[in-house]
Image (tube, rainbow, N blue to C red; front, side, top):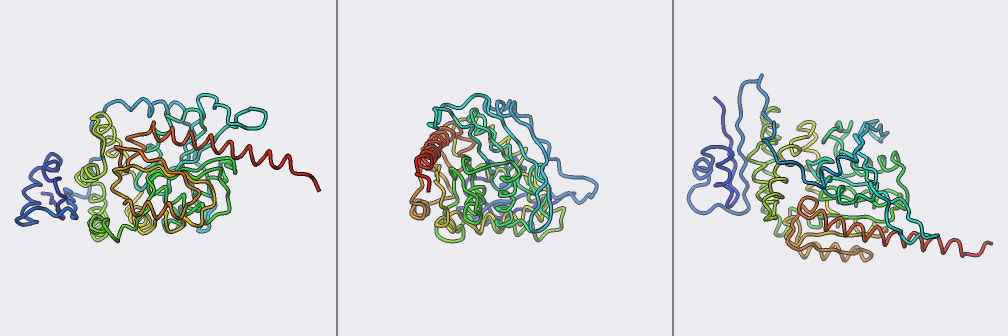
Length: 390
């Protein structure tokens, strides 16, 4: 007979959780005692089967067809494994390349031509390249490269620790291997925004622009985000304290995933909601091992974009959602204050999952930023051409 572990309860989640694990509401109610559940707590439940020969069933439920923009991106996809030489030793990263499906519009370059625009994207914590596909699908006139960060998707773990500095080093190595230059743009979502910001602050590479989607501006363990951060911390500490197999089962628990979905999805479109839940079921548990995800969790929860913002000199675009539960107005204001060169595009009715819920609006903002970058590049080149020789 298996066992059910329940830790806390997230306000309003118990009824929905009962559809995932039977009787979980009763167990949660007994463990919490009388009275309303505190909003700060989280609910984690996982069925632990003691039989060692049986592995968790991670097969996704039947799902609707991919969104049209997702499907369009897949027709452009070419993937390869790329060797990277890092400070801690060599590693390999799976890189997914998406060639532009149509010619870009003229970007104001000398002679009226349009430079072939390239974009390097970085996904968020516990994701992989699949999370960026809707955005890629809308940017069909741009060459896009999306690596699976080490330890996630099809990329093996790093030989050393999975720190934000190590991921920033990986990003630099990928940019070099893929031939990105000062005319190109780098984009990161969520934890990817932290990786991109640290890369831009730590490495000498110049970018035409830095795009931060759902940027992590606030410290999680302070202010109004503290209660949720403590609950999340308890979840990952539980996963770390259990035997390996049980810990991995906690990390891949469908009920924990349901709690995440409930907290993060803001769209009211049933089709979009179903798509997000399906993508999370398929890919949120796609980490290499427990060590990797616990190290990456620590990197994602202890660092922000704000802490290095004043060291970023490239042009910056911030794409934020009004309903993002991962940021506060004060935190975003502090971030903007440290990025005087930044443009901000705020999307109404959207939360943290901008790449899922509003990929078209995000892509339009990116395209405007790319056009401005092309004009800036053309201006710099023209100034150089007109500069008298010594």
